[in-house]
Length: 289
Image (cartoon, rainbow, N blue to C red; front, side, top):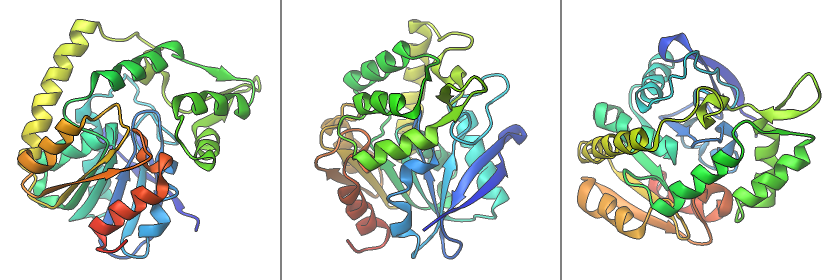
């Protein structure tokens, strides 16, 4: 199954790219995490395409979407992009599925537009991030602010280190879709270096902590406002979302929350255990395994 590639205007007219896997039914929009792109859903999207109008977005600064001109990569900009996508595609009510960064964007979008969501799936994401995972990601990004590679295989080696539990085909797909070749023959990430702090530098630790506290509070409040059925998916070996936070989200804060823990998976649930992820989400959005 091959998706159709489409261009959509995001916030402030930024050119966004998405993959359209099917065209009939209620829309189901897939939103990836930091450093990934729309192809991270390639295993899952075909399984749900017979039941929904399935769309996978390249978030701003990622994949084949444009880079923000002045580093507009705050959560409010990602949320505004979702608003524009829904308006451009005449989407009224839909199911939103977000992983990691995409999950946090989905929470905030749901808090602002609860009437738009028929269902929500939050994949290994939370208002509060486990310190182990945030430290790991900071180290990975800090060591490779603006990397380049002699060939695609060299990048695959880096991905194997960063995604130790991912399936081999997922690693190969990420390597193919995340890179572009420069005029000098070397391969570089499609991702905007500004997102990795290679342009303009990173905020100070104090600024980051203050911003994260504000974002955390906003996300917990957003979850309280989401009335639709919501599935929280956690990788059993995740270092991003702790069992306690996942339980709090599903059992205490979300009005109609439920939790699915996928075994043999870390943070990148859909690449670590594609079958387990598929079964958990299909049970929720379709009612079958």
